[in-house]
Amino acid sequence: MLDIWIIREQPDLVRRSIEQRNLNPEHADLDRLLQLDGEWRKVQGRVDELRGQRNAISATIKKLAAEERERAVAEVRALKQELGELEQRLEVVREERDGLLRRMPNLLAEDVRAAAATRTMRRSLAGARPRTSTSSRATTSSSGGSPIPSISIARRR
Image (cartoon, rainbow, N blue to C red; front, side, top):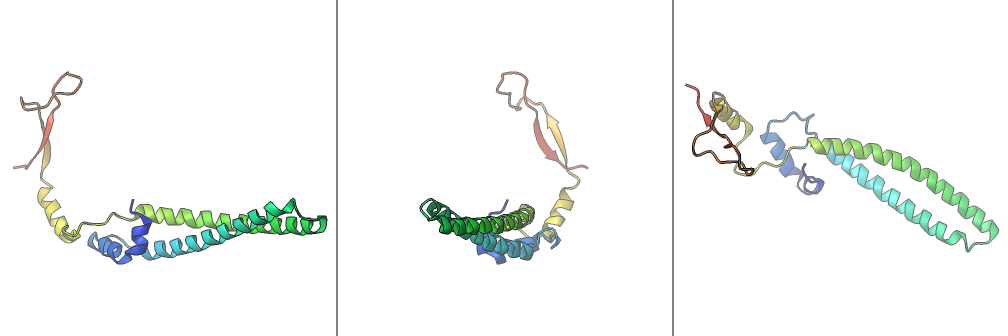
């Protein structure tokens, strides 16, 4: 799986790799992934901020007078409710973002040819079939038993 950091920092490189593979844009929707990641980061920041506020207020509740304590408890409840809603939204966005992230292809090396050229190569190898052999050159298994067949690709004639 491609690291989200690479996608954030080098979206053009990722886009170029998607194009080289001739992938359906719906399969690897980079723009939607970036949008969801931005939303996830924004919501996560707000959740962290609210948790910090809740923790700070909760830590001071024991030291407060009765009236102030009631107000602080009410504020913590309001923060807890807002946090619950944001955490649900965060989970939905995270699941969609991670689903798209799992479908992102790895980057192609710079020396890899475009998908059109590789299709030609695949067609030329389509006639190849694996052939097994247990010749004297075959290696033996580590358990000491029978030889492990070696596999080679041979062209059909």
